Length: 256
Ligand code: DGL
Image (cartoon, rainbow, N blue to C red; front, side):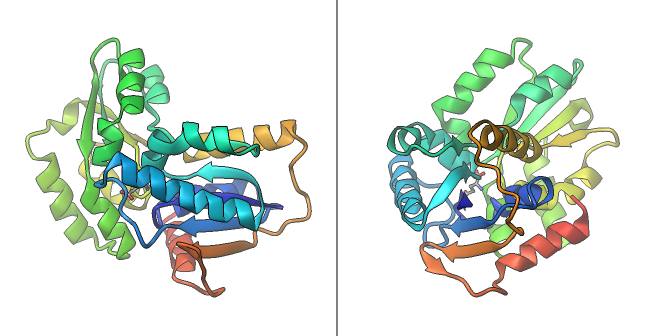
């Protein structure tokens, strides 16, 4: 059986890309909820409904595990999903823990969607870990739109980011946490904007490492898969050479 990956759009491909590296002998279903993207500026009720619909579809197709490759959907729907299904369900959350553990006394900037930053799950995470009050949050919903449009022009993205970072003293940040799976596409550009030595981290590698452990514990690891991926846009099957493969190629070429 395949491993399911779900996101509002193309963000989860950054997590799937990591899975293809760490678990090449698996096959995958990737579901992008393109009818409803973006999630990060919608209401909690809508996002819950969309996520439940998407996972119902994937469960009916048959998956042995699910990665909710979306921080926003994780914060809203992960508990309900785990109550509904028996297969292992892994979510994404902004990598605040590794950032706090690693980061000396410099500040931490968490970039995510407005809904993720507003939600209780994130607020609790920060309250639990940020004893020295070093964590700041910054909502960047337009980066989701840029990624959906395959708009990776460095000049345009830099202009947008500079305007959003206006007023922030970038020198005081030791770590930038990419708390939205659409954001790793912009890692190279962010690196150019922040001072040298700033850590820019996301949760993909850790999540996939954990997925490997969970599959192993349940004897669900495959040795016969070939990294084959079935892509769906809100329940509609995409042809083999769909636009999604361009995103995998982009990640591959930008060596993120
Ligand atoms: N990729 C998503 C996340 O990790 C959601 C982006 C969106 O749809 O707004 O939060």
